[in-house]
Each structure stands twice: as structure tokens, then as C-alpha cells.
Image 1 (cartoon, rainbow, N blue to C red):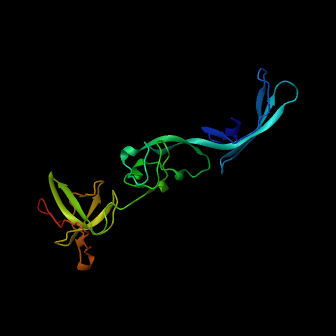
Image 2 (image 1 turned 90 degrees about the vertical axis):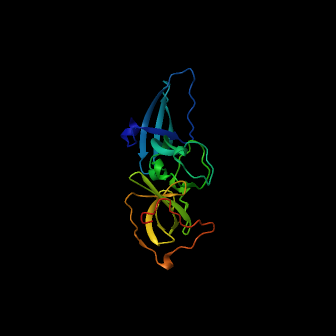
Image 3 (image 1 turned 135 degrees about the vertical axis):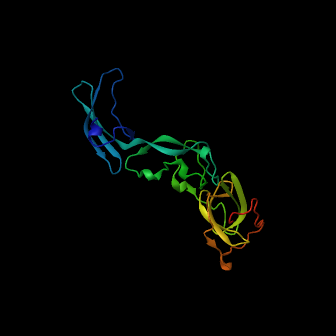
Amino acid sequence: SDLIAAGAPSDAHLQPATYDAPMVAVDGHSDLSAQQVSFDSAHGLFSIVVQIDDGSGDPRTFRLSGHVGRDVPVVVAAHDMQGGETVGAADVRIASVIQPVGRDQDDYAHDPSTLIGLTLRRPLEAGQPVRPRDTVRLPLVRRGGMVRVSLVSDGLVLAATLRAMQNGAIGDDIRLVNPVSGAIIVARLRADGSAEAQAGSMPVGVASDWQMPRSLPGGSGFEALQGGAGL
């Protein structure tokens, strides 16, 4: 309570540094009391001078100091993962960890959805907190690559293979061009490398010759399964 009165959070966890406590008799009775209590909120440090009174008339004191932590919900690895793996919904979960007070809480990720589709820079152990800097957004599709695009409208599925005009990762909205007509549309990339255009989507323009990205090796060309609907 003295530490809380000094400004520490009510859910504080004390993480003492190494200290030397005076020797007391195992079978004796001693009273402990806090004589001086301080808390540095900027750095999350505490200091307490503890008095031990064993009834001998010669009370002894020692200083206890260290960090103050608190429970913070963060994103952790659901299982062991290797560097280079792509993060999926089943790979991360929310868990409470003790984080030192005063440390920037943005040091950890707090929303699992922000990590889905990203690639790990390093291995993570199960239960280990994930930091945004532990991941990197790698392109799922590169400019010039062929992308299967689908559009669902009134129960009708339209599909075509278009060429990407820019790099894109999972969840990105990218521009794609029909290599035959030059029509440009915008579609959202999915985890399997395909893309989905929104119902009612219309071409956003027509590509000039200099805008047409060169085909990457293995490109399959344009193919419309159900007409084209402007694709």
C-alpha cells in the first residue's frame, strides 16, 4: 500500500534486484516495516528501506530495490515458430505478461490481426511476446506477376487472370491490368496469392503501353471464365 501511495500501479508486480538481507533467527519472531518508500514512474524503479525488529532492541534495516511490472495483454506465439514463417491466425494469441512500468507498451504487439500474413524475422518460442519489429511484410505478389482475380456478384462468379501493376502483400489492395484490353482494376490479395474484386467494381482506367508491366517467367496470360465484366 505504501508503494501504491508513492504512485505505483495497484496491480504492480515487484521484481527485486539482488540484495543482502540481514540474518534473523529461524525460530524467532520478527516484525517487518517499510521505513522509506520511493517510486520512479518514468523508469519503473522502486526502492524500499525495510526495518526488521526481532524484539532485541536493536532493529536492523536493509534496502530492497528493483523494477515494478504490471500485467499487460499482448500477442504471443501460440507455438514454436521459425524465422521466415508466415504468421497465420492460429499462430498467435493474446496472453498477459509482466511488463516493466515505464517501458513503451508499443514495444509489444497488442492486436493479432495486425500480424496475419507477415513474415517472422527470427524464431519465436511458444508463449513468447511478439514485437512488431519481429516481423516484416514481404510481397506475396510482385509487379508483372499473373494473379487470379475473382468477383462474386448476384451469385455469379467471374474470374480472370490479370497482371499485377505493383507489389502487394496479403490484404493489400493492388492495381491489376487486363493484358488484352488494358483495363485496370483494384482487387484485394488473399493468402493463397489470388485476389478478390468487390462487387460492382469498375475499371479505374486503361493502361498505356509504357504502363503495362512485363510478364514474369511462367505467366499464364489472360483467361476469363465467365465473360469478363469489364475485366
